[in-house]
Length: 285
Image (cartoon, rainbow, N blue to C red):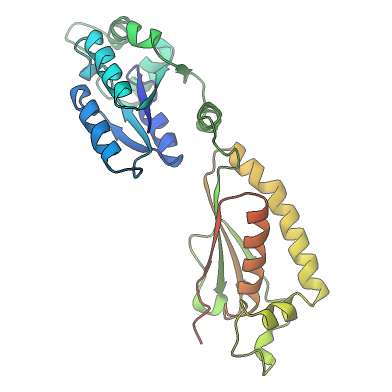
């Protein structure tokens, strides 16, 4: 079982790191008491694979003695956990600005001291934890997309095409899908509904697919659409987008759009993108 320990300075972005790891299918727990970590690891191991990737976030409020933390980490390794420590930090001025913007209180803030004093004190307290970290991430000036790329590169074995795509067919007569990121109207294609032997079939039947893709305009549209997705998807990933919904609509959502959606599903699968397909209105009359 892989366990990522996310520690570091308050206000540096530990929660944001945890959110990115959660998008990478890590089970994340924020502010878990340190003494509970080995027991939690035992419970995860007892599920026999249900929790193979876990991220635990801890901060200075849970650290009474760094030596105790080191001992707990060793216990978890002895259980068979592959443990990695990510230390998140930022420049003092950046953290002070973030606290002033959010108007939140620093956990080490005390009467008669400034936020800057609290941050510097925390840096001293966590010096030993920082030294034992496997990776140090400075979030000063780090955008969300850059943080995502940093973490995806850090996690060995991660697919760089880490964007989940859903292709959805629908019928315009039943309303627009509000979840669409990209929407394409293919009502310009001849409708199999008006072919008596195809009317009761769907776009998943070979006869309907052969009819739809037996037309030059269908194949030209499909080729252009694939070219556009080849261009768009890497840029979406670069900007940190992790989920994309592509909707293809025809009049009733029974013939043309399911056939085109299935073709897109096959194409994106061949490009090694995680993709699934939903036919929203295929069973409707």
